[in-house]
Length: 288
Image (cartoon, rainbow, N blue to C red):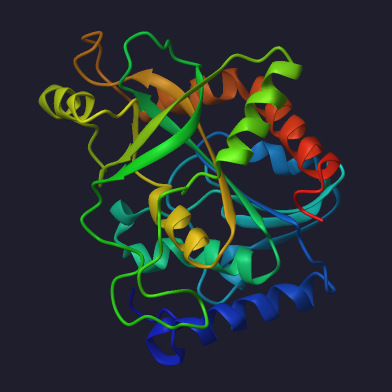
C-alpha cells in the first residue's frame, strides 16, 4: 500500500479526492449503478452510450492491474437506460496489495452516487454438477482472504464500525436478477462464493474442504469490494462466471488461459443478463 493516498490523507479524504477527480473529468456525471467487471468480462463497458473512459493511472488511489484481461480503466456512460460507471478490471490482493487498497475503487463508486453495485468475477466451480460457462448468482460468501477491508480505524462518515452482513447480497435484487434471467431464457444458478488468497489455484484437498463448508464457487476477488459497498450502504448483486471445474474434480490441470477463454465464450449471454438486470432496475425504480 506504499504511496497510497490513504496513508497521508485518511480513507474518507482519499475517497473524496478520487470522487472529485472523476466528477471533474466526467463533467458532473452521477452514476446510478456501479459495475465491477472481472476477468474477460470488461467488454460490457465498451458499448456504453455517451461513454467517457478514465485510466486508473490517472486517478488518485486507483492501482493499475497487472493481470491479463483487466484493462484498468473506469468507463462512465449509459446502458439499458441506466447511468453506469464500470471498472474494467480490478486489482487483487495476490498482486501485493492490502484488502483496503483493492476495495478502494468500490468505495469511490458508491461515493459518486451508485446505489447498486454489480460485482462480477470469473470463478472455479466447486459444484460438480455445473459445467464451465455456468452463470451463478451469488447468494452469500465465505471470506478466506486473511485480510479484511475494514481492518483498522473506522470512519463513521463512511459506515458503522460493525456492519451487519446478514443480507450482503440484497434478497430483493437477487429475485430481480433471477426474473431478468428467466425473461431472457438464461439459466442462472445460485450459490455461495468463497474468496481465497491466490495466486495459486486451490489444491484438490482445499477444494474438498471448501465443498465441505458449503461453497459452490471459488475465486480470488470480490469479497473486499462487496464488504465496503455494504459498509457504505449500497446494495449488491454478485454474479460469477464458472470458467472451470476446480482442482481434483476432473483431474485436469488449470490455467488462466482457460479462465479467459470460457469468459469470452459466454460473454454474449453474460452481457444479455446484465442488460436485463439494468433494465429491471430502471423499470422498478430501484435506482431512481
